[in-house]
Amino acid sequence: MGISDKYVRKVKVSCASLRSYTVELRREVIDEAFDKILKKIKILVNIEGVLIRGEYKGSILMLSPKGRIAIIKGPEEEKIKEFLDDLFS
Image (cartoon, rainbow, N blue to C red; front, side):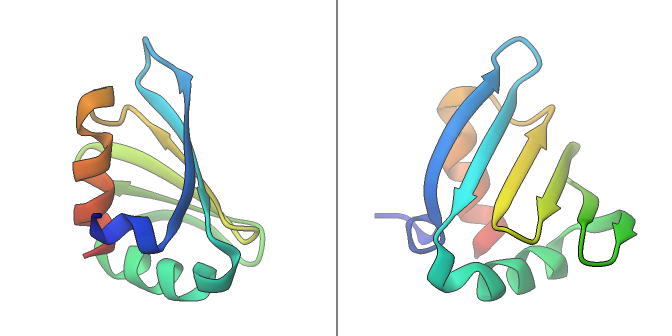
């Protein structure tokens, strides 16, 4: 069990060719997860209460306040778990 298992409920591949993923967070730890993420990403756009767009390790992350994260240009599918573990560490 990795670090990200505490925060991540489900990961879906949105587009394999673009290496895009949709990550659904566990509801009970959304605030804690966002705090960890915001400390690690470089914020590009912050539309208060609507969307935060940031960059982490060459990937674009879009965070919604409802606990969903879109990852664009993410790691290879085999390495997404490692990427998320590092993001939440």
